[in-house]
Image: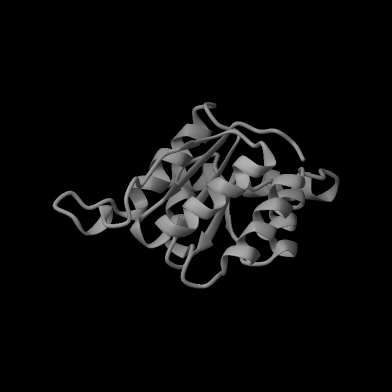
Length: 160
């Protein structure tokens, strides 16, 4: 398994699964930085922590080179994935099975794995994380496709 500089974050809906994944990362000996939330009710308190805020912290950490990869967890994984993908240069993939997680890395060079705590159980989530961490970008024909994704992103930025 490749050792990467890893960031992990969750909103209040993903808090419990984030803790389980952190314990699993500890078992695997994978270092990580926890970028939030710190308690399960953080999103419903006087200062809510919304998933775009957590996704921003992880995605900008990747964009700025502080991290190689990130794991984001919310209720479905959808909001985290959409939010992280708004940061130029970041590719986030929502995955709830090991094959999709592996392909997210091998074919799409996804630096961010998004999961939904309300749609995936702890043991399956661990296998998804393991598959994603164990995979590397395969290059080949995927290199051309990723270049097109990057060009599309650049074109979208110019259009604004």
